[in-house]
Length: 241
Image 1 (cartoon, rainbow, N blue to C red):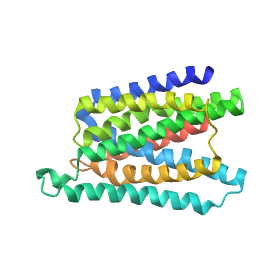
Image 2 (image 1 turned 90 degrees about the vertical axis):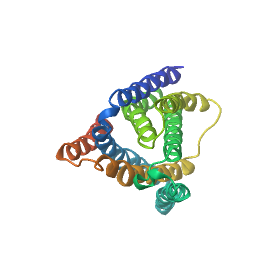
Image 3 (image 1 turned 180 degrees about the vertical axis):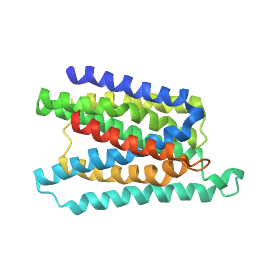
Image 4 (image 1 turned 60 degrees about the horizontal axis):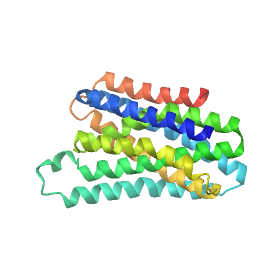
């Protein structure tokens, strides 16, 4: 029951983050600069350490996680480029932005949010203390997950209404993830591969999609500073949450 109550806090955190991005959509280049730093920070200070710990604790072969990372990076790159090629006749081809890419990105983030909920549930299966620690970390970075969902939808030419719909999906996903752990136990070998795959996806959309988009119309030291701030923010969250 405690895990489910904490999952409600993840719902609120994600929702507030997404609504913040909607409110400041006219300054999306600044928000995107911060978001790119957040995504890079999540991979470096959250996902990679978790992968390393799982590999050490279970004596897994690390090459599997790295292969999954490359597959995650390349798969999204290929899918995005196929969409661009398919829509090459469109007038907006020049900026390589299409609603399908935003939807795909938002769905992947919702999948990650679901796994966040699974992480909370499995943490409570270990002990209440572990569950609370995991929940605090998830709640802290779910604010930026909500921002990321809205930004990826809006920058890829989806409507604000549709962005809010996917924000709701992302906000509900951790709750569903927590509830699902009442019925199954996730093998840690699968979790390592999932984390590697998602790290590759985040690296792609952070470094190859969102960051270039943030600098597309006006590149400035303010955006660079916000990217660094986003990375530092995640470092602090992962060290103290």
